[in-house]
Image 1 (cartoon, helix red, strand yellow):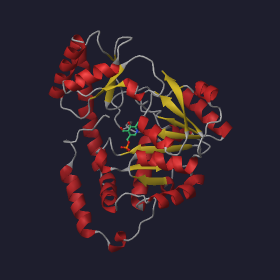
Image 2: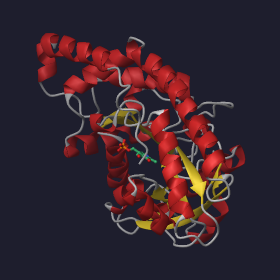
Image 3: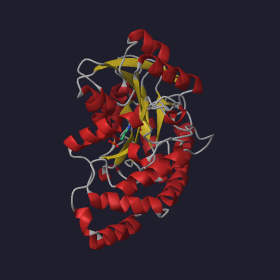
Image 4: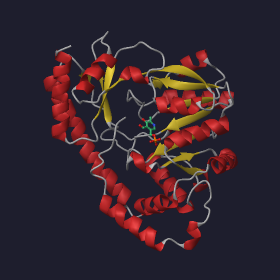
Length: 357
Ligand SMILES: Cc1ncc(COP(=O)(O)O)c(C=O)c1O
């Protein structure tokens, strides 16, 4: 999975906030906290999501989670009964599939095309699915944005059938070009969309912090479920993150990372144009932390990936993210976490691997 740059993390700022709260934590904060999370952090996230992502919510709808994986599992626990059909993008994020399967849901793979998840195909395969899992800002792993028409079709389906939509907005903070697309949740007039996000990509994955925004009528049910699973994450990290967000450090860090990752993506594209021509087809992406490299028709991406790993280049095969087998092979090239010389070297190694099957 694509990692952020772990070295560029502003450790000094974070460390001074840890010291501040470690020493000066108010005694009442050492007691039991609301299971939905530290209220000022819920407020800060609600404010951030409404300005940056067009999400419409009040802080009471925001649940602090131990990363989106926990938000997905919580959603399955509250909304799904064993055997309920769930639409999953195919190819798609297998972590979400695992989380929803743990609620004994019946996973229904739904193909994606240039406009995102095919709503018509979902309706054909399972018209009364209970939930649709989607990554509309930046489809994982292929990278397209869901078109407005599809978004409206999906919302119409949810309103008509009483289905739920689970929007995973996992890396849309890293937009380098083009017009920012607001969240699908912001288009929803009927309270059918749950929205999850994570700090794994914008800060670092081991932090295990994310959020889930639920429609207002579901806040009580999610509050009860959060209580039983023992969420939220530790208070010290929540206090630190609150200040990190409200004191402007987060915005500053994002701006720096956007610049850095845009340069890195550009470097990968340039190196690929020189070394990988005809062997791996790469397109620029306006968003995110990885690129998809398409192999020639019929190539076995798992075999290529294994050969690349033997040369110490990690490029996940696209097949790993397919639910139904078949389709063109490709490699996922995570570029955000590596300096440019390392990326250039990796592209050269990949070219040698592809040249010498
Ligand atoms: C589509 C998608 N959603 C969510 C996540 C992050 O999950 P978490 O917040 O549990 O680290 C990832 C991580 O790679 C992802 O690819």
